[in-house]
Image 1 (cartoon, rainbow, N blue to C red):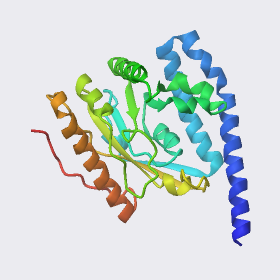
Image 2: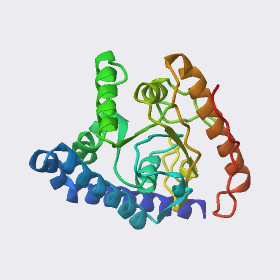
Image 3: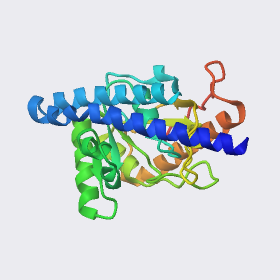
Length: 264
């Protein structure tokens, strides 16, 4: 039985990778949109197709992406979205969860993935974390998006969490950006992605990934001296939510009630 189970999972993984590549290949014409229609309009259309890719990949791979608390988002303003990072499936999870347009910050290494890597720089703000110049350039690009009223998305852990802890320590970048631009932070927690596609044991399983939006964290009046406080506030907020949902499950009628906290 174990042999049969492993064989089925291998076939399923091959199927999912094949459909991923096919959908990405069909999306290649989107590369020219920013050049033909301009970066703003072309980027918006490309991001819509990125959402369709996320839903399409989930449908063909028998993975359901569920979202809770989307009503917490005020679509008339931009946010800096932050989320925990446990699996490659986190990317289609946040893409399908966030309404409207958004520009994620992504690692330069992802450009090496066949097909996907060709589209990657056109829908993502790319950063090479080993280069100071690249980090500065990417932060400036994110600031520009926020000035245009476009939300941005960052994994504050910086890399995928392969430990037994709920999250890795956060980097300062997302929170410095929030204070510099006076843009609220909107934390999200992504649940069950590691169980469906773990990083260490690369084995895909069908199932449901749930993304829960938490209470937005305002930054009005904060200065750069408050970066550590803001970072700790968001970290604790997300960890409490992860602990709760991992213990009790994530359903529409089982919502984590967050304490109302403020700075000062």
